[in-house]
Image 1 (tube, rainbow, N blue to C red):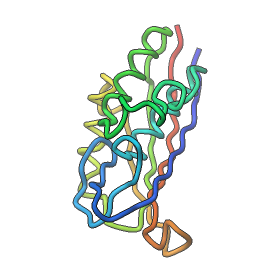
Image 2 (tube, rainbow, N blue to C red):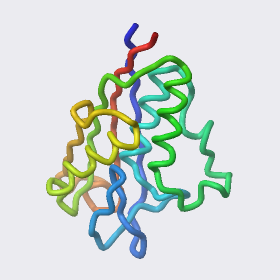
Image 3 (cartoon, rainbow, N blue to C red):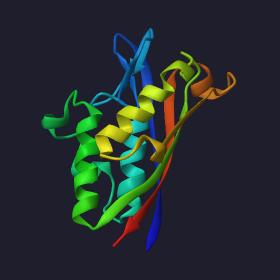
Image 4 (cartoon, rainbow, N blue to C red):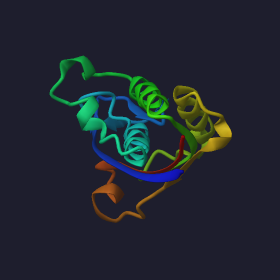
Amino acid sequence: MQRIGQGYDIHRLVEGRPLRLGCVEVPSERGALGHSDGDAAAHAVCDALLGAAALGDMGAFFPSSDERWRGADSRIFLREVATRLAAAGATVVNVDVTIVIERPRLAPHLPAMRAAIAEALGSDVGRVSVKAKSADSIGALGAWQAVEAHAIALIDMR
């Protein structure tokens, strides 16, 4: 049986924090504010995969109230989600992520993001897609106040 899950995350952008997206540090004047590393792309992927397997969401496993996750690298979350999927008898068929951010331009970093997400999931890079969009100067995203990520995942359940 195949199942689909959808994930979403948004983080405020602030000065003085690194910008990590898709498990890659991207040079930027602003980074995502978050309890962990603020990687909206990785967090959306986690929620999409957990949702597809009907295992809940990131908050159930990695609550922001838990100090263990303060500043945590989101690869940890992706690896743990992959472990939980395997325990549930699920394998990743594919993951598709769209990151919405006004700047910096992410195109040069997309191949590294694909590879990093795939590696963290223990999956083939051909099963991971990462795209970037701008908000065309509309709203908080367009004013470079936030970064948003949407993800869809397809899994195969035994």
